Image (cartoon, rainbow, N blue to C red):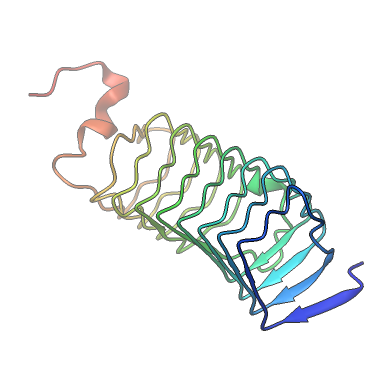
Length: 190
């Protein structure tokens, strides 16, 4: 149980690899250019917070509550978002590096990934209904029994999605991206 409640604070340019990040509940806080690499966010609650220019790579987010969180220009390599507290989980990502992250079985309806690198990300069995992948690189991302209904891939790049094992009804794709839907057939498209 978190002991402290911290509200309406801005934390700027703090290196939490050398200083302690307080176990608390944070609401309407901003974290700007902070380094959280390999930090322990276990059981911490974040509500209506913004992380901007932060490095959260390989942080422990086991049981972390992320409610209405915006990540902007953040480096977030190898995070296991499926370990977060699923209650009211709601995030958006803008210009973030999310390579090797796992979203296994998460409900991320209407989630925005804007100009993100999602290389080798795992979306297996996730619900990405109406998610938007604007200008995002999905090279090597795994979609396996994923709900992509109404998702928008029109400007996404490098994805490979098998329509026979994923739900793609009413999803949006560009003509240039059609190759990503036909990869499994090993055909040549010119």
